[in-house]
Length: 118
Image 1 (cartoon, rainbow, N blue to C red):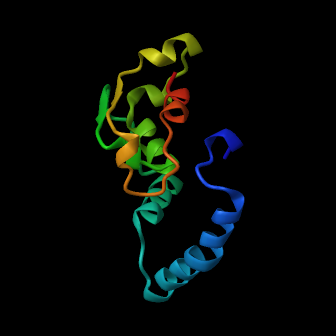
Image 2: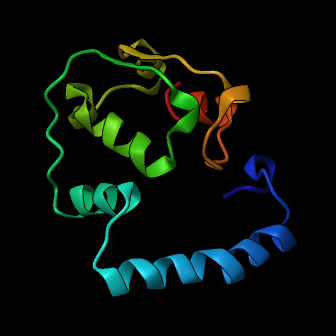
């Protein structure tokens, strides 16, 4: 992730990764559990997302991770078409959210989100 999109320092990230994330992953593996991110990765890896929708409306966007946004993008019929970059902003995506209400530490940033869709 580019430095200007990081929401925590490298030190804090490392502490959470070492002290929380690793044990969480081990717990899931031992109990044969998946979380929403595991499911999202599986769906993308196995090409199970179909481009079916001409317009996409999303609420609570502040809680989406990059992988979930990739799924949303691939749901659009326009994701399978080549188009000039000046027309990308015309693709009908509507995102609503409030970055002050983020429930998960997704690193959500409106500028980063819109950069991928403009």
